Image (tube, rainbow, N blue to C red):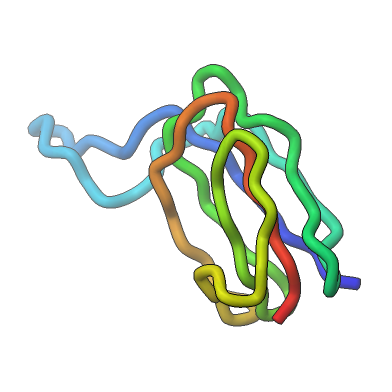
Length: 99
């Protein structure tokens, strides 16, 4: 079994001049770890303040985000040990499946 790590953020970063930067603003809002396998697994609902997530897994996986998502083998694929950021809706969840 593999682990999907989800780090939740409220904002993107700002440069001192106020320019928005393509980075997450620390501190994070919450962190979740979901055990993933060949069967879809869901996270808990994102925090009410969460607007962005960073996801990474120790194995390649497919994922889907929504109110009650089910990940399938044709969903967006992430390679193992890579990280990516996505904008999300508070209260939504992420589902993932290895592959």
